[in-house]
Length: 221
Ligand code: GRF
Image (cartoon, rainbow, N blue to C red):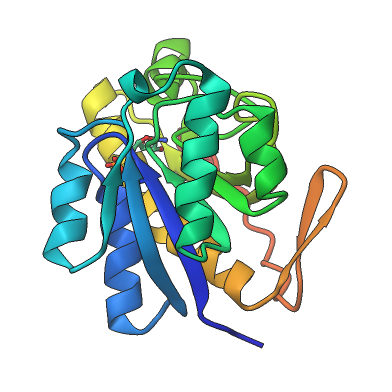
């Protein structure tokens, strides 16, 4: 059963993932409401995107706190005072403390621009590109105390072509990010995500057909 889930979105930069969540809510394809967008960066373009859609914003800069603990407590207080159920990390460039994670157990999602557990941390697209992988992609996962280590909800795969640059690959990945993040939030809203240890089971979804992909295609051999 779907309910309207109250979101708090944490951002630091451009906010294109925030935009895809907003667009899906406005289209009626995502049963959610963004109660607050919080940024640690007052210059983040994401803030403009939120304001344009009448979404309340808060800027909480690092300078305003003496410790990580104190900063994260401010985040928790702001989110809870806006009745946020699910925290959506959308390019939030900050590692969260156990205090924050404990306040929202399995209720914090993150998106990472690589196929985890490969290439965690910053610049996932560049790491994959430099490594020379033939496929990369993106991952939506629940946040835990590690860096990009939490239980995986959805992944998308894209090919890496010989003609790619880091920028073209990043663009291809970002397009998939915009598809899978709203989808993951929707599955949460529908109560279809069951976390069992490291595994997230999606209730009532059809088994995908087996379709192995090869890059370059095997037909070339
Ligand atoms: C995305 O690549 C996301 O995977 C990573 O940070 C970037 C945020 O982009 N966590 P945007 O601000 O949503 O455009």
